[in-house]
Length: 134
Image 1: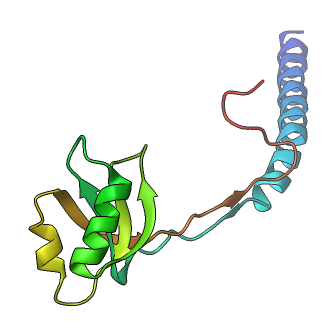
Image 2: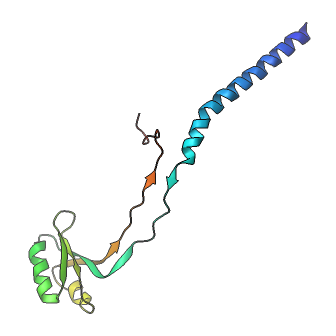
């Protein structure tokens, strides 16, 4: 009698294990298919400087439009975009040999190379939401 109970208990455990295995695999199978379709773009290269192109940051309180015009005439710059909000300054093409003069101008706080930066995207399969969304 005890042997029958043990066999019955053992058989129930095996059946329970098989049922759990089927249940778990049925949930994981669609997830595996989704994960196979995830595409992650390669890591972008380091930013590349644009030849003779710089971002000129001006000292606080100076008018970037007026200063960019003055410096264009004085130093032979070709002014690009004038920044009024993100920073006080402008982008410009500075002729070779004039970079030192621009850096030493009393209105200039900082001159940095203009860089090419590339964005990287990631494709996520349908049904996968952003982290934290419900």
